[in-house]
Amino acid sequence: SQTIHQWPATLVQPVGSPLSLECTVEGTSNPNLYWYRQAAGRGLQLLFYSVGIGQISSEVPQNLSASRPQDRQFILSSKKLLLSDSGFYLCAWSVGGGDGPQHFGDGTRLSIL
Amino acid sequence: GENVEQHPSTLSVQEGDSAVIKCTYSDSASNYFPWYKQELGKRPQLIIDIRSNVGEKKDQRIAVTLNKTAKHFSLHITETQPEDSAVYFCALRPLSYDMRFGAGTRLTVKP
Image (cartoon, rainbow over all chains, first blue to last red):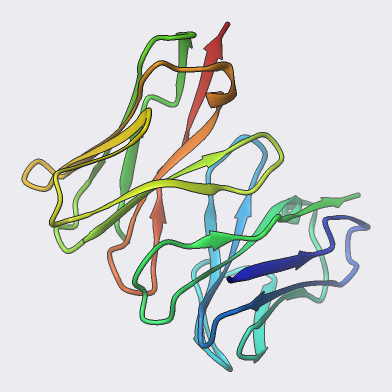
């Protein structure tokens, strides 16, 4: 069966520091991968999605970036965090080709001080 | 992109009553409509989904109905229980790699 791992679970970072969140998927090949951000009490904002290695599409222009160095690895990064980057970051995967639901990781709660 | 309107934003029901959440959309190309449940501090989890060639689907106390002509779909929870309390998100897929989510409905089931 497929599983998705996301880490760390929680992170406290000072303003201006870098960020690296990692997500890996097991049990499937060539998945579509996604990064979402969820502000407290709000909905899901799609940040990036990827349909293959090295293929990244950005939904929202900001100081975040994403990379997919391997088929089942998706990384969210920032060179300099802003206060507004605080939130709950969720990685998700779906079957390549797009048939079926998205499945979410456990999320990373990021607090910027 | 595709807009998904979800109503109500909050819903409070008494235990045992039914709850209905409705979503409307505009893109007739959408063909897949999942519903997610998110408990506090947890990840969204798929609870039921429906495809455009089906009008209704039921799984125990949960059902989803789809009206493609009117472009709306609804989640129905019967005999609600306190553990049904959570935020529910509707979603749809306008393109094969894309999923659009509603803003969410916070359901509270009072014992």
